[in-house]
Image 1 (cartoon, chains in turn orange, green, cyan, brown):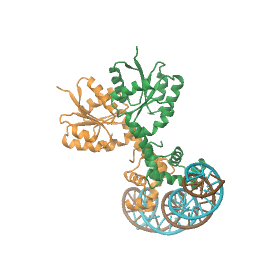
Image 2: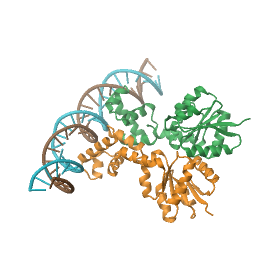
Image 3: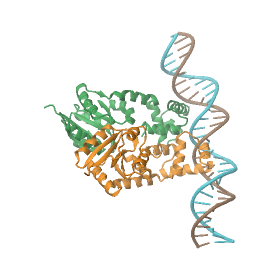
Image 4: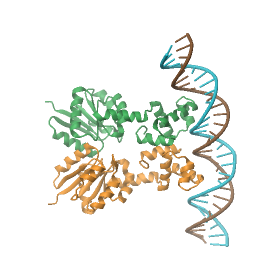
Length: 204
Length: 204
DNA sequence: AATGGGGTGAACATTTTGGTTCAATTTTTA
DNA sequence: TAAAAATTGAACCAAAATGTTCACCCCATT
């Protein structure tokens, strides 16, 4: 019959066990596999899975790569990412990796249930508040990929001379871009910009 | 009878609902109150609560201040903090605010149950792995409160001149401390140190 | 063809930060 | 107490980052 087969990939046992009990209490849903790491997910994946509820951040790697990998093997499976408010910026990237649904952890279980049903029916689902949040998060910074590259390199200890060389721009331009970054982020120093960028998950 | 009355303070609805179901399934435990924010926690607090399972990070403030506040009113209540691996550094601070128990979110529910029982029996509980993790976390950085102050100020956009003045040390000493911070953190630049510190939750 | 905007690079001066050394003071250790 | 070590502050210099101005090129508009 039409039992929805769900796999849980989530490193927090509390969340995973809680979700499992909640799902098992529902009619028409069952948890067929669980994993707390990317490695476990690869091992425990079952071909007949309908939906994978996936935590983006896993102890042994990025959940998104895992997602892309699994979709090669089992294209029919739908992914729903469990995000936190901090992860809103990842939505764009997650979509590129083939995640069809997004639901924040602060959502209620009823909302998760409908997320599962709607994702299976329509092939996609975006939690109502997330869309705006993501846009807000992006417009707050509005940084281009290039500007984020600059931040990443500075955050990894390179000086401006090397950053400019690595990105094939002059020191002048680099300085202009840094100033632009600070303006966009509404801060005064590159240090403040870095702290803010890390907080927002723009750089790892 | 000896029913343990539990309050849940946790902003992620999934976690909270899951915990609630898990607890309600247990003999001898019941959830008497819930909250997703500090404000809700103040409003929903009941005098007869035995244990509060508390997420440190809440949308409208620090769970630790809330903890201290509630302990004034209802001293008999025991607090168990739900931490993530990133929060290990907060253990020391949390202890000062009167948290008696610590359990990471990646612990299993069975471990949470025993955490609750042991905290009530002994007045304290520390998840086995956390102690070492916390020490590792601290030894990884080993930064003093003063050094963290420095990072915080630089991260908020102050230049070294102002930081030194604000902390009543000379520029020479400040520079020495900054160098010490970089050495301790194993990085080359203050920018890299900042990025790392934000990642580790040392500064907000 | 002329105009103007956006982006880039160079060339200054100035400020800020980092490297090094030395003297004075406090704290620890023998 | 005396010696050694750690901490602080000052001075000087080098390096890096920032402020400012100007010229150039590309491209779209007129």
